[in-house]
Image (cartoon, rainbow, N blue to C red; front, side, top):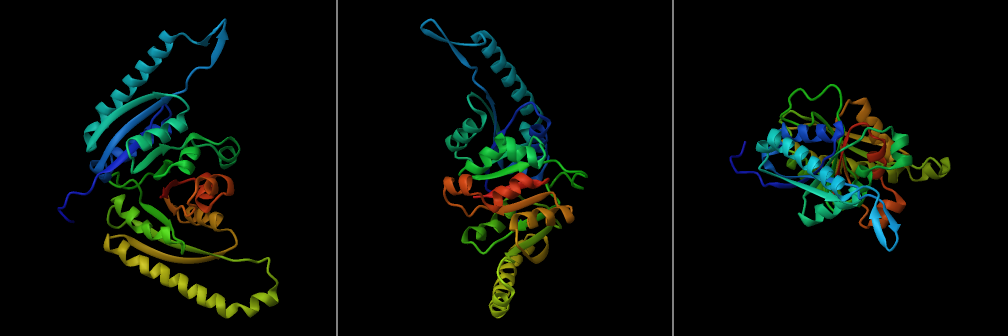
Length: 303
């Protein structure tokens, strides 16, 4: 293990009173990664609705009540700092008012966050799709890497590592060349299982006779896919990871990644986000968005 001090990660953790948020903080604080994190614990209180009374706009609750709530949230954050703050490189608290998701994005820009850590509220996949969530909004719109933390049972054998079995969904897109470096920044313990998975998309809608004509071409594509996996594997093995390469052919990339993570009892899925613009991420959808909404594990979206 090198004695060189690891670079610090400017880390924004979204906090509220929910168990998932507290679990995310606890998992990071108890991991080997904690000493490399400059942490900002942020709570965002929704602003009360305003009503027009005469010529004035008045909140439906008195200002004294709002200030009392802010003080209570600050006290709550201070308690978390007292419990876990010493485990981080540094730890500060931030209390804001506004729309939680938008304020978290603004704070991430303000502090130049390397990544945002959020606990998932644990809705079913259907609820996450239909109702949306703060974590979904932030993960799809942030300019930095996002970790959506979901607790799994059983917990990792050692709390020094946040995760014990990881799926890295790698594609042939140029941004995915950064995925191994992102794994390295998590400081996973040597011996962690890393499943390096490439899903080659198939198109069963094409007629069989056309597929036969391009069979030789498909073999070239498979060969290129394996070369991609093999070029990435040594970096992860040099970190002490147990790398299991896998090439899968499927007509639905996102669903295959989710199913693979479930069948191999993984507790983290790492995906790149190849959609460069916000419009592409939000309106057109992506593999990373599908995985984020349907996975039962934690998801790291790398940007």
